[in-house]
Length: 425
Image 1 (cartoon, rainbow, N blue to C red):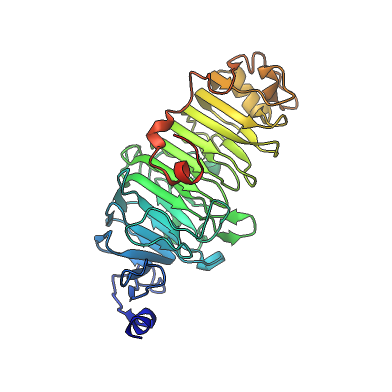
Image 2 (spheres, rainbow, N blue to C red; image 1 turned 30 degrees about the horizontal axis):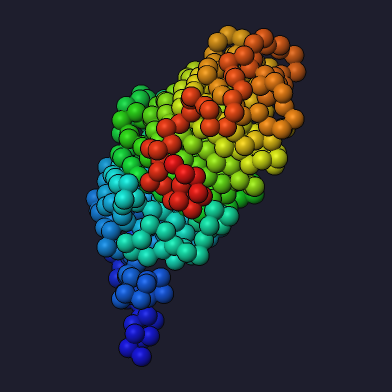
């Protein structure tokens, strides 16, 4: 009887920590909820509910769970520290009620998990409990149950009309904490937004508007002073990780079962993505989608040491190089794709860039799908007027397991995807 009474008890505390920009911006509300429903019958599993702006430095600890209700914004000059093993749950909601953790320009997140104690961002519906690394009621097919993580910075980016700042995708234009890019000041290419290490992001991508979902991890003009290493995104309704400009380097990335593109690059992102695994499922589109500058500022990225795992005969693609893409993609191993999947030069602009050595490929090894007899046939130029030569000559056909390139998958053996997906890393 007493246990049931405690399960129903809610203790609420309010803490004013300041506004973000305007007087109508919501203050932080902290609720401590004593709730045994998500515990393993081991006493209370208190969750602290966060909403609005974080205006002073604070730490989220592993002995609590946290619920993100709508937008939680780490404001300029503020650092949010998250301990290894902490569980953060996003509350369900669509459009203006979509939940997301946002690090605004000049804010900082220090979230350093470990292989045995990753920091987990998941949905409130997940029955994972404090001290666990996985729940039992959700899987990769459960998508769009909350928003995602958005980090914004001041590094170089190429915007339409050469404007110096834009509103990030997934945040309404009325919310000025969604701005990214240098603004009126010079770009800060070594801008430091903090550290993300050993982070698991699950079941996100809630709908903001028609055709506009939040990515698992969104990086807008994030600088090279930021550390992003050992990140997994699982079951996100939109992209896994999307880069909007910026110079940040990322390493050891795994995306499993995204609804759109696994790794999506825009606006002259000019960092390096090193050691990444993409695992497509029935709702996935491209493993890689690469776009280029949108203004006069040019910038090229490098993708290297990638393993791309297809979803069979479902019509998903290896990679799409679009618009004015400028990128080098090296050391790729791909298998499990259908015969219709391709690596594509999408238009005249990117075909011209390929001819001018602004789009480069080397050392691709592909297990040929049934019905494909020549690896060069996977590489397709769809430019209407610009012809290319040698596209696909950088690839060789291999048998499964004989590859000598691709990601070092053992680096990602810590991930939930490796266990739940039976990847064998």
